[in-house]
Image 1: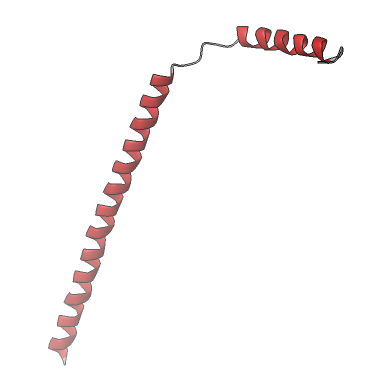
Image 2: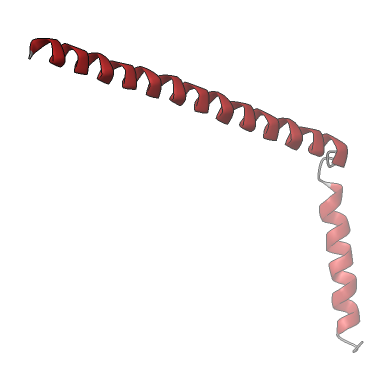
Length: 76
């Protein structure tokens, strides 16, 4: 390490120490993990419910089309 690198390194260590003293404590890793897992499960459930909703709407749309065919057949 050169003569200039040592003071720069000490300055970086000092700045890092001062910067971390003003911060609030970081959340624990387990809390962050639980939040991530719950968020992932919530997204999966929402996507599942949207898929069910689209299926129901598609079936209703198909049944309307079939009813229209029956009406046209009776008119002819």
